[in-house]
Structure formats: C-alpha cells, structure tokens
Amino acid sequence: MTSSSRRAVLAAALATMFAGLSGCDGKAPGATAKPSFKGVDITGAEYARTLALTDADGQRRTLADFKGKVVVVFFGYTQCPDVCPTTMAELAEVKRQLGADGARVQGIFVTVDPERDTAALLKAYVANFGPDIVGLRGTPDEIKAAAKEFKVFYGKVPGKTETSYTVDHTAGSYIFDTQGKVRLFTRYGSGAQALIDDLKLLLAEPA
Image 1 (cartoon, rainbow, N blue to C red):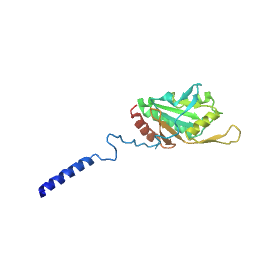
Image 2 (cartoon, rainbow, N blue to C red):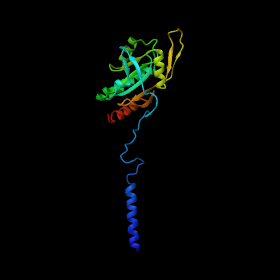
Image 3 (tube, rainbow, N blue to C red):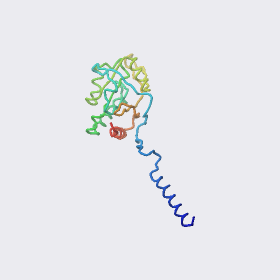
Image 4 (cartoon, helix red, strand yellow):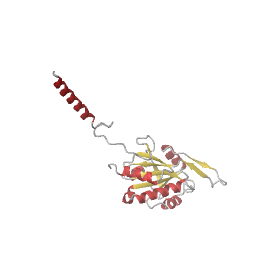
C-alpha cells in the first residue's frame, strides 16, 4: 500500500470514529434526560406507595382517586403553630402562580393528630388554603400505618394540660406524578419557586 493510500485509509477510519462519537453524551440512543429537580428525587422508592384514609366528608380516599394530577402530600396537624400553615399557604400560592395548571395540582393534608382533628375541624382548616385541598384522617392506628408507609415521624410533646400538647413531625412534602408514582420529597423551607419549578417538570411529563 502506498503512503498516500495509507493516509486515505487512516483518514477514513478517523472520520468514522469521530462520527460515532459526535453524539456521545453518556446516554443510550433515544434516551431522555433525567429531570433536574430542586427537591430530593426519590423516583422508584419502595415507600410512600399507598395512602388510604378518610376525608372530612367521611369518604374513603386513595392516591388512585387523583390520577391525572400531580399530588402533594403533607403530614401535619391543625393546631401546628408554624410549619403546617406555612407549608399549606405556600402550596396555595404555588397553585395560584401556576395559573391554569394549578388545577392539575392536588394538595393533600394528612393529620397526625386524629384525636383533636375532628372531621369538621379538618375540613374548616384545609378550606383556608383553597377549596380543592383535601384533608385526610383516620384512627390512631391507621395514621400510624400511613406515617410508617411514608417514613414520616411524629410524636406528642406534652403541654401544660392533657389536651394542650404539640406534635413534632416530619417537615416536608411528598410529590407524586400524574401516574400516582412517588417522585420527590421537598424539605420545609425550600421555597415556593423551587416547588413551582419541580411541579412544572412533572406536569410536562407525558400522561
């Protein structure tokens, strides 16, 4: 083979190699980029998979009832002085800022204080944050089981009287996609804009 022929073969080989590398980004052909969430991505988690409790009207509700919407689940209690009302007010503001898409976001408030949070009290409480927020409650055992499924901690802190206790609890929300699969955990204090960005990403996913 002449020198010029060898150069031609080498050039052809290099061209083929670089053509193969031109689209190399670490992903298989046709793969979609993983969403860049602000919250903690827990896609595929083997917890927070089921939720079955009673709403303030006495109806049994499950996550399947809200399929087609992005669902935000928060565990708290109506006499919470700070974290709970702040979180729910933030969610209400996020839904407002999302405009028409806000109707595709479902907020669920699960009480960890079923002894004091009667159905009537729970209904009045969630109504403060929007007409479509759902409050859920159950027996102490049902709430305990739901919290365990979601890896949520809660515990009474004694007050001056038997009924004036507070409840320490996990301060964060779980977010489910429109297929009812848990995707994110958002920590308290992350801010409205971070939640808006994450909800937009989930709302944009194929149904």
